[in-house]
Every structure is written in C-alpha cells, then in structure tokens.
Length: 191
Image 1 (cartoon, rainbow, N blue to C red):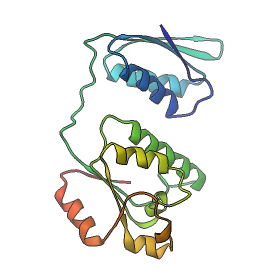
Image 2 (image 1 turned 120 degrees about the vertical axis):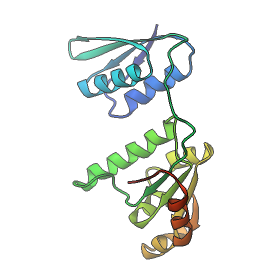
Image 3 (image 1 turned 30 degrees about the vertical axis):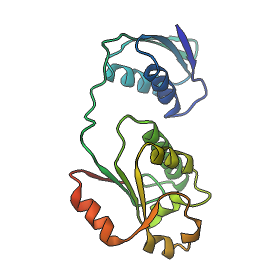
C-alpha cells in the first residue's frame, strides 16, 4: 500500500497529491495522512466522486485515509464541453487582499492539475497582472499552455497598468476578439 504523507500541507495540495497518485495507477491502494479535517473531507469527497472505496480514522491529531481504486473505478467527466474562462481580477473573491491572492494562486494551480480545463483563458482588467513577470502563477499558466490552453491578455488593460513590456505568458488581444470569444462559447466562466 502506497503511503502519501500530506501533513502540514494546505488546500489544495493534499487532494492534488492524492489525485496524481491514483491517476498514475490502474488499480491499487493508498493511505493518505493529513493533519486537519478540511483536508480529510476534501480527499474523501474526491475519492468518493471517483468511485473509489474510502475509509478513514483518526489517530491522535492525524487523519489516516485508506483509498482503494479497482480497475472499474471511473470518474465520469464531460470532456466534450469546451469552455472559456474570463479572469477579471488578480484576486479571487472579495475581502482580504492577501487571502484573495492565496485563493487565486490555489485556483490557477488546481486548474492546471485538473482533468477538465478551459480551451481559452482570457485575462482582463487587473487579471492581466497574473500574466506578467513576477506573477506567482506563471508556472501553472505555462503548464496550461503546454496542455493546449490558449491564453489571451487585454492589450488596453496591460497598457493601463503599464505592464505590457512585462508580459510573460499568452498573447495580447483586443476587445473585439474578447467579445467574439464570449459570444462563441456555450459556456464562459467569469472569475
């Protein structure tokens, strides 16, 4: 049985490490160790959603999660539905700025590890700050590009913030193209 030690890790890393292991095998078992209930709940939800057998118990301050994948366990995903993602801020959610930065970094990283990814990522307004030199999400954005995602950045927005010369990922686009993308996709998600 594979041991996956996720003590001290914050969301979404315990789930991603668990998913990476189970994606790499056709069938097998693993014991995942986490030190908080949120991670335990998230891993259990992931495994149950995949059709895996899940059991957990608490030992001292740790949660030990046993997961079994057999060769008929499958996660049902609708991979045929293409979508575009419109990112209009460098923060995710409203409230504390530091928390918004942490959440956006976690979201982009998790997206880059997901089975279902958008066909296009369109960055507008302060969202373009995520695509320039010094951004904490460049590695994840490059991984998405490697997986076939097209990244487009609003040229007017880059000019407004004075960061056009710092663009590291994606291509500069204009409002006409952004409108065409929004109008042509059956599903556009805005963050």
